Length: 103
Image 1 (tube, rainbow, N blue to C red):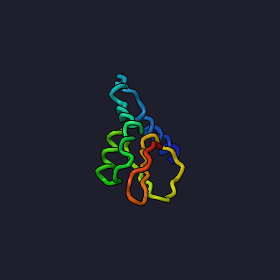
Image 2: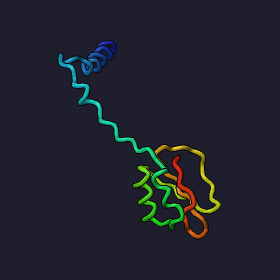
Image 3: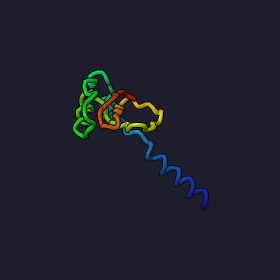
Image 4: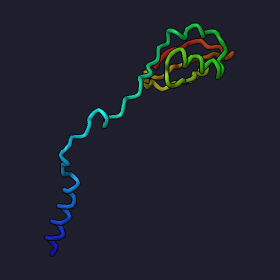
């Protein structure tokens, strides 16, 4: 009796793998990849010397095409992880932007 239960459970499990005779549309099955948002620091260099504000951060994100922004306060330490979709903005004690890089 035990062997019949095991065989029945195996048959039911395999039934889900049975082919229906038609192949699924592979193009429809794959989700479209999101557009890459790679940071480009060059277009935002004119922000250097401006005040480090939320509005300026939003403008820098737009200009660089980055997905995220990391503020770097004076004397602050950063991790060395590199992210191609992130813009880094350093500012000084007077809250003036001193450096804009990607990573």
